[in-house]
Structure formats: structure tokens, C-alpha cells
Image 1 (cartoon, rainbow, N blue to C red):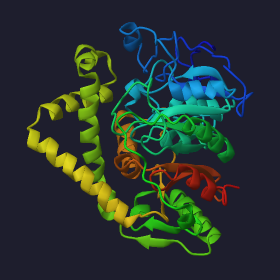
Image 2 (cartoon, rainbow, N blue to C red; image 1 turned 180 degrees about the horizontal axis):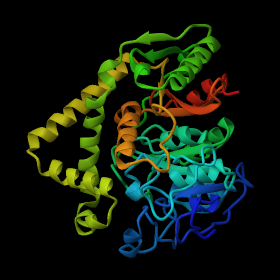
Image 3 (cartoon, helix red, strand yellow; image 1 turned 30 degrees about the vertical axis):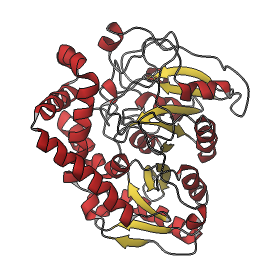
Length: 413
């Protein structure tokens, strides 16, 4: 493992303290592949960092390797290293982890986004062929967009999360980062062949693939007013390409009820309660050791958990009503094309206020997939006039992950 150095972060700064490499356990379709694995996915004999030295100090080594990772090892992949993440995977910035924040090879003066910051940095730097991480509120999608990668937040419950440290179990999924769309597809095929969906997840909602031969492509009306001109151009280019591949044109539709600060805060409230339920005693004992923004979210989780039951029930009903409403707006056969971030990722010198504004801005666009358990694919787009690389999200239907990749392959070049 590369040691940390003062000054400009080096590519090795993507690896977590105590990182280990793991050889392949078999041979198969992934033989020769190397993986950067977020250091909250269990590796037998290793103490996961969860993005914080105090976590390692207070926990023992894993007794087995997470099934999703074990499947990749059995298929011939090896682990190049265990990669950094934001503290407890509870951030979207890539700045709140251990030591020096991972370097963004695409934009060296900017952050990688989080919380799967290390895997994204490693893949973008060519230190691994693909990254395996988690996505709760955008932790695969934001780093993919920030680092010029393909990224997939998988359907909730599609890939086993056994052996993965929980953040908010109703939203946590295993996700994938890669430099190529075909790589995502191969990794997805291996992990979904497990037949081990999350223990508390029902079967994914699927639909006939014929409905996606010529999908209806939606750009939510009004959404692009909240992003940079370059980001808006990239979203429209992807929407036009997807629709043209199916012989149609993109449409605008009013989805204002499904985006915005109120929806983002609904997700944040439910998430915070679940984080406190999963880790409350540890958080209470170690809250002063957390980054200020993470500590603030933990304190909010404690307060929300102690709030009257009626408030919690109201949020739960609002969550289910939201999911049902979006299903009516975006049935099988309809794709929504979305920004992932309002603009480029934050500068490494960004203030705390700037980082908070970035997080809230991205949350508006990442929340729909998180609240509904839908897959979302991020594809990198180069904006030719500016030269900037921007990530665009394509929101599919539950269980339609492989179909989403197939559709995107029509325009990926």
C-alpha cells in the first residue's frame, strides 16, 4: 500500500489504512480483473474501517467475506486494495474520511464525491479495473459523475448486502463503478447469479423487456433550471440519444412533486432514524470523534428517533405514497434522465458551507432512486464546448438493471 504524503494527494491515497489485497479464489469470466473494494464490505480476517479509525479500534475482524465479494473472487477477480470512504458512508462529498481525501484523477483540484470515494479514485486512476461500493443516498452515483466513470446503483434487494456494514438498511445497496459499460454488465451478471437477495427485501418489480425496446424518455420539467448550462446540455444530449435510438423524441413531464428540498428532507429524516437504529450506541459513545457534519446528522437522527411516533408514521406513509406516485409517473417502459450533481464536484479547498450546499444540491437528484429502490445508471458525458466531463443519471424500473445497461449501450460511445 502506498504511504500518504504531504501536499498534493497521490494515487495511493485512495487506499484505506490497513488495506489488504486478496487473490482470486477461482477462475472464470473475471479472471485477471482487479477490484477496489469499499472498506465496509467484509473481507475475512480484516477489520473494516467504515471510514473512521475509532471504528477499527472498537471492532474485531470479519469472520467471513461478504457473499457479493466472494462471488467476484470465485469468478476470477482479485482485490487490489480496500479503499477509503467517507465516515460511516454518510456523506456525498468525499472529504470526510480518514487522512488525505482521495485524489480525483479527472479533476485533481476537486474532490471525488462520496461516500465511495476511494473506489472511484482507484478506478479513475487505473489502479483497479472496477470498484465495488455501496449506495444509500447517492454514494456510487455521485463519485461516478465526479470522476468520469460509469456507475450503477442497483435495484434494492437485487444483490446481497450480507457482510456489508449497514448505514440505512431500507436504502443500502451494493453498487459498481467502472470505466466501461461492458464491465458493469459483467460484474452485475456475476453478482446477480448469487440468488441471495437482501434478507429483508421483497422480490424486485420486473416488467417485460419488450416494453423497453423503444422506451419513453422523460426529462423532468423544471429540473434543469437548477443546474449549470453544461450539466443541462449533457442531460438533454443523453435524453435525445436514448429516445432517438428507439425512434422517438424525449418528452418533458411535470415531476416537480418528486424532486426538491422537501423530498430530500423526507429521505434524510428516514435515513437518519435508520442510521441511529443501526449504530445508536456506538454513535453516542463516539460522536465527538466524528466530522462535524456527520456528527450533526447523527444528533439529528437521535432527536428524530425520540420524536412522537405519529411523526415517524407520517414519514413512513409519505415514503410509500411517494414510491406509488412515481411508479404511476414512470411505469415500466419509461426512463427518466436526470442530473446527478448540479455542476462539477467541489474544490478540495471548498468551505464547509460550500460542501453542504453541494450535498443538498445533489440530494435533490439522487433521492428518487433511493426512496423507490430503483436502479440508476450514471454515464459519463464529455461536454465538448467546455471540455468538462459530467455524469448523467438514467432512472429505470425495479429489477430492470440489465435492461438499463443494454439500452444505454446504444449511446455509450
